[in-house]
Every structure is written in C-alpha cells, then in structure tokens.
Image 1 (tube, rainbow, N blue to C red):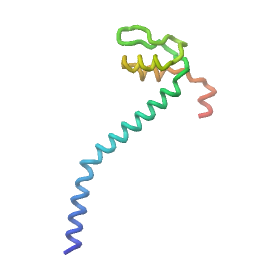
Image 2 (cartoon, helix red, strand yellow):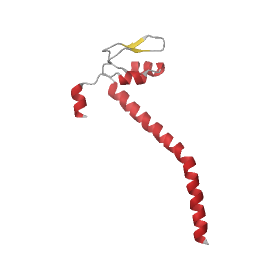
Image 3 (cartoon, rainbow, N blue to C red):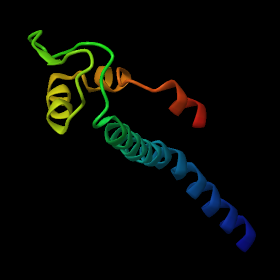
Image 4 (cartoon, rainbow, N blue to C red):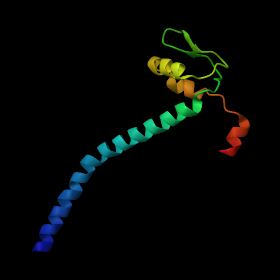
Length: 99
C-alpha cells in the first residue's frame, strides 16, 4: 500500500512541475538575454557605427563613423533603437576570423 501512496504523491508532484516550469524558464531566459545584451553593449562601446542611428523624432543619435558612447547607448535605449545601434557596430573583418 505504501508503494501506491508514493506513486500518487510522485504523480501529483509531476503534474505541478509543468505549471511552474515555463515561468522559471522565462526568468532564466530574461536574465540570460539581459546578460548577453550587456555584453553586446560593452563590446560596442568605442566602436564606430556603419549607419545613421535616429531617435523617435528623427534626430540623429549617431552618424556614420561616429563612436558609440555611454550617452549614445542611453539615447538609443530611450528611443527604442538600441537593437539597431548594436546591429550597426563596425566589425573589422580580421577580428571576426579569430572568433
């Protein structure tokens, strides 16, 4: 009888896991995404951009060849264009071959 009772407890525990599991994955995913975004920002600082980066009112945050600074990162984040800025970081071809 003890074995049957233990099986029921394990089954109930197993049923609870899927309800909590996606929430935990989301939290871990968000933390990992934030970590990689911060790493991308650190790698972008001091590098030139390959295109013009605008804010929401079409004011220029960075022009082609301008260096990425903490201030430009902050402006791009506020304007919702940080992803565009990070995708526009100049990459030296010889640096990519070592990665």
